[in-house]
Image (tube, rainbow, N blue to C red; front, side, top):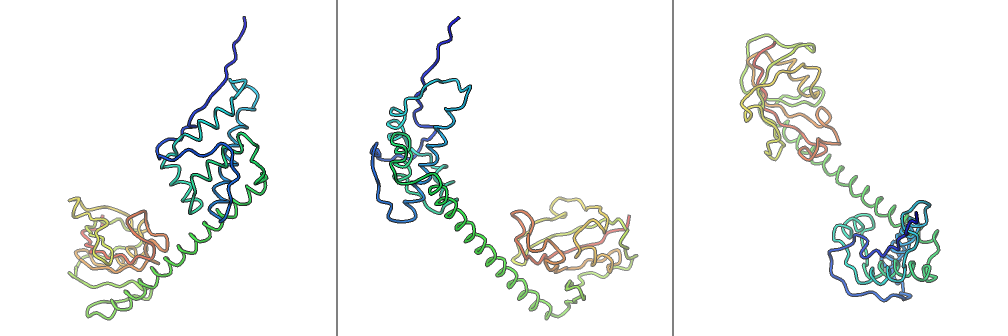
Length: 271
Protein backbone atom coordinates (compact mmCIF):
# COMPACT_ATOMS: atom_id res chain seq x y z
CA UNK A 1 0.00 0.00 0.00
CA UNK A 2 1.42 3.36 -0.97
CA UNK A 3 0.95 6.42 1.26
CA UNK A 4 0.62 9.71 -0.56
CA UNK A 5 2.40 12.58 1.18
CA UNK A 6 0.93 16.04 1.18
CA UNK A 7 2.38 19.46 0.43
CA UNK A 8 1.19 22.16 2.82
CA UNK A 9 0.36 25.70 1.84
CA UNK A 10 -0.57 27.77 4.86
CA UNK A 11 -2.27 31.06 4.18
CA UNK A 12 -2.67 33.49 7.00
CA UNK A 13 -1.19 31.45 9.88
CA UNK A 14 -4.33 32.15 11.87
CA UNK A 15 -3.61 35.85 11.55
CA UNK A 16 -6.65 37.81 10.44
CA UNK A 17 -8.52 40.96 11.32
CA UNK A 18 -6.66 44.25 10.78
CA UNK A 19 -6.52 45.51 7.18
CA UNK A 20 -2.99 46.36 6.00
CA UNK A 21 -1.27 47.09 2.70
CA UNK A 22 0.80 44.34 1.07
CA UNK A 23 4.39 44.16 2.29
CA UNK A 24 7.10 43.60 -0.37
CA UNK A 25 8.42 40.04 -0.56
CA UNK A 26 12.02 41.14 -0.39
CA UNK A 27 13.20 44.28 1.32
CA UNK A 28 15.98 45.50 3.57
CA UNK A 29 14.13 47.98 5.74
CA UNK A 30 16.05 50.73 7.49
CA UNK A 31 15.69 50.03 11.18
CA UNK A 32 15.85 53.62 12.34
CA UNK A 33 14.54 53.19 15.88
CA UNK A 34 13.88 50.63 18.58
CA UNK A 35 10.33 50.00 17.38
CA UNK A 36 11.66 48.97 13.97
CA UNK A 37 14.31 46.70 15.48
CA UNK A 38 11.87 45.01 17.85
CA UNK A 39 9.26 44.55 15.11
CA UNK A 40 11.74 43.07 12.65
CA UNK A 41 13.30 40.80 15.28
CA UNK A 42 9.86 39.53 16.28
CA UNK A 43 8.92 38.65 12.71
CA UNK A 44 12.37 37.15 12.11
CA UNK A 45 12.17 34.79 15.08
CA UNK A 46 8.52 33.86 14.66
CA UNK A 47 9.13 32.81 11.05
CA UNK A 48 12.13 30.79 12.15
CA UNK A 49 10.09 29.01 14.81
CA UNK A 50 7.32 28.41 12.33
CA UNK A 51 9.68 26.76 9.85
CA UNK A 52 11.27 24.65 12.56
CA UNK A 53 7.98 23.05 13.47
CA UNK A 54 7.80 21.58 9.95
CA UNK A 55 11.26 20.02 10.21
CA UNK A 56 10.35 17.66 13.04
CA UNK A 57 10.22 13.97 12.30
CA UNK A 58 6.72 12.65 12.06
CA UNK A 59 5.15 15.89 10.85
CA UNK A 60 2.36 14.89 8.44
CA UNK A 61 3.63 17.03 5.53
CA UNK A 62 6.79 16.31 3.60
CA UNK A 63 7.22 19.66 1.85
CA UNK A 64 6.34 23.29 2.38
CA UNK A 65 6.07 25.84 -0.40
CA UNK A 66 7.81 28.66 1.44
CA UNK A 67 7.56 31.10 -1.46
CA UNK A 68 3.79 30.78 -1.68
CA UNK A 69 3.56 30.93 2.10
CA UNK A 70 5.49 34.22 2.10
CA UNK A 71 3.25 35.69 -0.61
CA UNK A 72 0.15 34.63 1.26
CA UNK A 73 1.47 36.05 4.51
CA UNK A 74 2.27 39.37 2.79
CA UNK A 75 -1.38 39.72 1.80
CA UNK A 76 -2.75 38.54 5.13
CA UNK A 77 -4.23 40.62 7.90
CA UNK A 78 -3.02 40.76 11.48
CA UNK A 79 -5.36 39.97 14.31
CA UNK A 80 -6.10 42.89 16.61
CA UNK A 81 -5.75 40.68 19.68
CA UNK A 82 -2.26 39.69 18.54
CA UNK A 83 -1.23 43.32 18.07
CA UNK A 84 -2.59 44.19 21.51
CA UNK A 85 -0.73 41.28 23.12
CA UNK A 86 2.59 42.21 21.52
CA UNK A 87 2.20 45.89 22.38
CA UNK A 88 1.64 44.93 25.99
CA UNK A 89 4.93 43.03 25.87
CA UNK A 90 7.01 45.53 23.95
CA UNK A 91 5.07 48.83 24.26
CA UNK A 92 4.98 49.30 20.50
CA UNK A 93 4.95 47.40 17.22
CA UNK A 94 5.27 48.27 13.52
CA UNK A 95 3.13 45.73 11.68
CA UNK A 96 4.75 46.46 8.32
CA UNK A 97 8.29 45.93 9.65
CA UNK A 98 7.16 42.85 11.58
CA UNK A 99 5.77 41.34 8.37
CA UNK A 100 8.93 42.16 6.47
CA UNK A 101 11.01 40.39 9.11
CA UNK A 102 8.76 37.35 8.87
CA UNK A 103 8.78 37.26 5.06
CA UNK A 104 12.52 37.88 4.74
CA UNK A 105 13.26 35.05 7.13
CA UNK A 106 10.96 32.72 5.20
CA UNK A 107 12.38 33.44 1.77
CA UNK A 108 15.87 34.92 2.24
CA UNK A 109 17.06 33.56 5.60
CA UNK A 110 16.64 36.86 7.37
CA UNK A 111 18.19 38.90 4.56
CA UNK A 112 21.31 39.55 6.61
CA UNK A 113 19.94 42.07 9.09
CA UNK A 114 19.94 39.97 12.26
CA UNK A 115 21.51 36.83 13.57
CA UNK A 116 19.44 34.62 15.85
CA UNK A 117 21.25 35.79 18.97
CA UNK A 118 21.01 39.47 18.06
CA UNK A 119 17.28 39.21 17.36
CA UNK A 120 16.77 37.35 20.63
CA UNK A 121 18.73 40.01 22.56
CA UNK A 122 16.73 42.82 20.95
CA UNK A 123 13.46 41.30 22.14
CA UNK A 124 14.76 40.29 25.56
CA UNK A 125 16.20 43.74 26.29
CA UNK A 126 13.03 45.49 25.20
CA UNK A 127 10.80 43.11 27.17
CA UNK A 128 12.90 43.58 30.31
CA UNK A 129 12.84 47.36 29.91
CA UNK A 130 9.04 47.34 29.57
CA UNK A 131 8.68 45.07 32.59
CA UNK A 132 10.99 47.27 34.66
CA UNK A 133 9.03 50.41 33.77
CA UNK A 134 5.79 48.64 34.67
CA UNK A 135 7.23 47.59 38.03
CA UNK A 136 8.46 51.12 38.74
CA UNK A 137 5.03 52.52 37.87
CA UNK A 138 3.38 49.95 40.13
CA UNK A 139 5.66 50.82 43.04
CA UNK A 140 5.00 54.51 42.52
CA UNK A 141 1.25 53.84 42.54
CA UNK A 142 1.53 51.75 45.71
CA UNK A 143 3.49 54.52 47.40
CA UNK A 144 0.73 56.97 46.50
CA UNK A 145 -1.94 54.63 47.87
CA UNK A 146 0.02 54.33 51.12
CA UNK A 147 0.39 58.10 51.37
CA UNK A 148 -3.33 58.62 50.76
CA UNK A 149 -4.21 56.10 53.46
CA UNK A 150 -1.83 57.69 55.94
CA UNK A 151 -3.38 61.10 55.33
CA UNK A 152 -6.93 59.77 55.71
CA UNK A 153 -6.24 58.03 59.01
CA UNK A 154 -4.39 61.01 60.43
CA UNK A 155 -7.34 63.27 59.67
CA UNK A 156 -10.02 60.78 60.70
CA UNK A 157 -8.58 60.19 64.18
CA UNK A 158 -9.10 63.86 64.98
CA UNK A 159 -12.89 63.63 64.66
CA UNK A 160 -14.98 63.72 67.82
CA UNK A 161 -16.01 60.25 68.95
CA UNK A 162 -13.27 58.38 67.11
CA UNK A 163 -11.09 56.14 69.27
CA UNK A 164 -7.71 54.76 68.18
CA UNK A 165 -6.13 51.60 69.56
CA UNK A 166 -2.35 50.98 69.77
CA UNK A 167 -2.55 48.86 66.61
CA UNK A 168 -3.95 51.80 64.65
CA UNK A 169 -7.54 50.52 64.54
CA UNK A 170 -10.02 53.40 64.70
CA UNK A 171 -13.65 53.07 65.77
CA UNK A 172 -16.67 55.02 66.88
CA UNK A 173 -19.57 53.61 68.87
CA UNK A 174 -22.93 53.86 67.12
CA UNK A 175 -24.77 51.73 69.66
CA UNK A 176 -23.41 50.42 72.96
CA UNK A 177 -24.29 46.82 73.81
CA UNK A 178 -24.65 45.30 77.24
CA UNK A 179 -24.05 41.61 76.58
CA UNK A 180 -21.01 39.38 76.86
CA UNK A 181 -17.76 40.13 75.03
CA UNK A 182 -16.34 37.48 72.65
CA UNK A 183 -12.90 35.94 73.06
CA UNK A 184 -10.44 34.91 70.38
CA UNK A 185 -11.95 31.40 70.32
CA UNK A 186 -15.56 32.57 70.05
CA UNK A 187 -17.93 31.97 67.17
CA UNK A 188 -20.21 34.96 66.59
CA UNK A 189 -23.10 36.17 64.45
CA UNK A 190 -22.83 39.64 62.92
CA UNK A 191 -24.39 42.04 60.46
CA UNK A 192 -22.14 44.45 58.58
CA UNK A 193 -21.69 46.86 55.68
CA UNK A 194 -18.19 47.25 54.26
CA UNK A 195 -17.14 50.29 52.23
CA UNK A 196 -14.02 51.99 50.99
CA UNK A 197 -13.24 55.48 52.27
CA UNK A 198 -14.88 56.93 49.14
CA UNK A 199 -18.17 55.26 50.06
CA UNK A 200 -18.02 52.38 47.58
CA UNK A 201 -19.75 49.34 49.08
CA UNK A 202 -17.72 46.17 48.53
CA UNK A 203 -19.65 43.77 50.79
CA UNK A 204 -22.80 43.78 52.90
CA UNK A 205 -24.69 41.16 54.86
CA UNK A 206 -27.51 43.70 55.11
CA UNK A 207 -27.96 43.68 51.35
CA UNK A 208 -27.91 39.88 51.33
CA UNK A 209 -30.52 39.90 54.08
CA UNK A 210 -28.69 37.40 56.25
CA UNK A 211 -26.09 37.81 59.03
CA UNK A 212 -22.93 35.73 58.99
CA UNK A 213 -21.45 33.30 61.50
CA UNK A 214 -17.68 33.01 61.88
CA UNK A 215 -14.84 32.38 64.29
CA UNK A 216 -12.92 35.42 65.47
CA UNK A 217 -9.61 33.82 64.55
CA UNK A 218 -10.69 33.33 60.91
CA UNK A 219 -11.25 36.95 59.84
CA UNK A 220 -9.06 40.00 59.20
CA UNK A 221 -7.11 41.35 62.16
CA UNK A 222 -9.20 44.49 62.41
CA UNK A 223 -12.38 42.52 63.00
CA UNK A 224 -10.69 40.14 65.44
CA UNK A 225 -9.43 43.05 67.52
CA UNK A 226 -12.64 45.06 67.46
CA UNK A 227 -14.97 42.19 68.31
CA UNK A 228 -12.95 41.36 71.42
CA UNK A 229 -13.91 44.81 72.72
CA UNK A 230 -17.59 44.79 71.66
CA UNK A 231 -20.35 43.56 73.99
CA UNK A 232 -23.21 41.70 72.30
CA UNK A 233 -25.73 44.21 71.01
CA UNK A 234 -23.03 46.72 70.03
CA UNK A 235 -22.83 48.45 66.68
CA UNK A 236 -19.54 50.14 65.88
CA UNK A 237 -18.12 51.93 62.90
CA UNK A 238 -14.62 50.62 62.23
CA UNK A 239 -11.83 52.24 60.27
CA UNK A 240 -9.41 49.38 59.65
CA UNK A 241 -5.93 50.29 58.36
CA UNK A 242 -4.64 48.11 55.54
CA UNK A 243 -2.11 46.56 57.94
CA UNK A 244 -5.08 45.05 59.77
CA UNK A 245 -6.98 44.31 56.55
CA UNK A 246 -5.66 43.28 53.14
CA UNK A 247 -2.30 45.04 53.23
CA UNK A 248 -0.43 46.29 50.20
CA UNK A 249 -1.99 43.67 47.91
CA UNK A 250 -5.65 44.52 48.32
CA UNK A 251 -8.34 41.98 47.49
CA UNK A 252 -9.14 41.25 43.86
CA UNK A 253 -10.54 44.07 41.76
CA UNK A 254 -12.71 45.36 44.60
CA UNK A 255 -10.28 46.50 47.29
CA UNK A 256 -7.15 48.34 46.09
CA UNK A 257 -3.79 48.04 47.86
CA UNK A 258 -3.33 50.12 51.04
CA UNK A 259 -7.08 50.52 51.51
CA UNK A 260 -8.56 51.58 54.82
CA UNK A 261 -11.72 49.50 55.24
CA UNK A 262 -14.79 51.12 56.76
CA UNK A 263 -17.30 48.79 58.40
CA UNK A 264 -20.53 49.28 60.26
CA UNK A 265 -20.32 46.12 62.33
CA UNK A 266 -23.09 44.88 64.63
CA UNK A 267 -22.47 41.99 67.05
CA UNK A 268 -25.76 40.09 67.29
CA UNK A 269 -24.79 37.13 69.44
CA UNK A 270 -22.05 34.77 70.60
CA UNK A 271 -22.93 31.29 69.36
